[in-house]
Image (cartoon, rainbow, N blue to C red; front, top):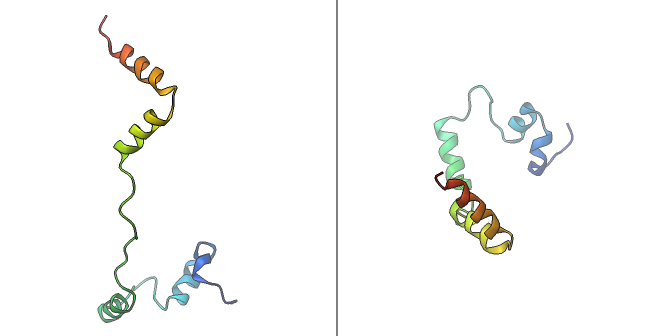
Length: 82
């Protein structure tokens, strides 16, 4: 097997990834190995502040688009009672 980096993990087979990370797909890691990797690599967390809330995304769409006022008015007119 050629030496492939972790950056190309999406292109590898399960067995290749397991071999690269020295683990077993069926059994997983032992408690000792998991603790060792946690100590060595840290927690498996994404970096950042959590992204933008859905509410802010919606508000941003209406603030940045000039046509959005028409979309709002159309939505409100659909809510009117007959």
